[in-house]
Length: 184
Image 1: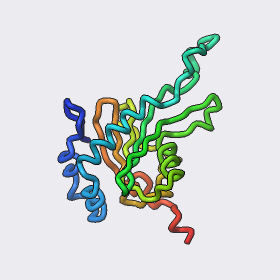
Image 2 (image 1 turned 90 degrees about the vertical axis):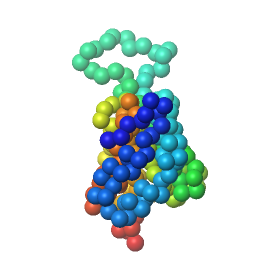
Image 3 (image 1 turned 30 degrees about the horizontal axis):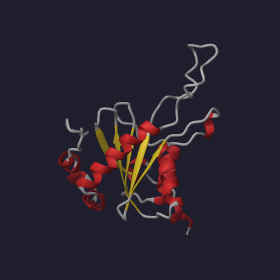
Image 4 (image 1 turned 135 degrees about the vertical axis):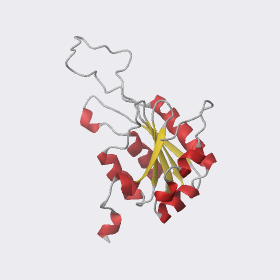
């Protein structure tokens, strides 16, 4: 796992060469395609997107009777995401929760939905940022959603609250996945 330095810039050489030789040739090609400058912007925007997460009870509302056995009204689990398109654009998203929990939307799906609606179809990398350590990976639903628009070698960079990060490909996150290519 790599860590952001004191100035909060990603330590790219560590990321790119940590187990680099152990990765497939196609994965190495994808990793080399993400420049250190792109990764810096990608991570900074994903971490900043956490602040826009809608996962807490609005300040003007208060619980009537606190109950220590139930969680708060919303999860308070902030997630930010940022997608880098192949055209060099960065699109962010944050989790949006709802009083009816099952209809909340994860940061990754917000970012991809925004990108797709804006006409983007080709993606280079994704960064996801949370406040927990080790960094959280996308949930199962998001993995399948991301797979719809990416391939097995698509890199996902996951950041914790301290700036530590690790990278996994979609094939590592969702092996033997089902995607649009199986429907042809």
